[in-house]
Length: 222
Image 1 (cartoon, helix red, strand yellow):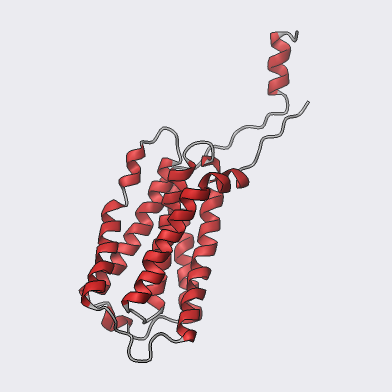
Image 2 (cartoon, rainbow, N blue to C red):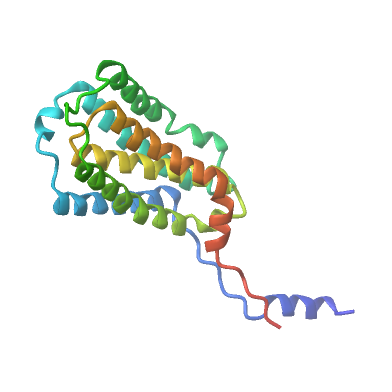
């Protein structure tokens, strides 16, 4: 049987000091800064929709943009807060008012403007550009969120990943609204609600596996 001092020495051998994580609000701010950079680069490459100045004065459109942006910001903050074991799960309710504003605005547009694209419908080119914006916005932000939250894997993987996914979905919906002028209900449902449901659904189903896959495993040395 190994002696206690030898056991302590063997456990402490080659151990490296643990680097303390930055405060959750600081890490959320870094992710949001990355999101702003990604959206800014897309604005340079794709260009803002030509009718943005007139649309921004539409209360419904403006409320939708504000709701999506607030959802992205608050969901990101909530994701980093609940990733810590000493924080209450009530932080998951932080983005709830913004989500209500965002989704209720989409519902209002569904009732008040069922089809507004025109007789030609949505062109293949426009749909392709929308899909490209979705991928170019969501992919880097999802990967960054996954890496930044990887240490939450053993704690609350499903809740954390759902909040992170909601943040990505909201920022992606914001980019779609800024860059593409197709505002018909079908496009809103497909790219706004559909994006949110897709990311949150993936987060709920595969959040634990994704975080555990990317979380570094400590190595045991003799």
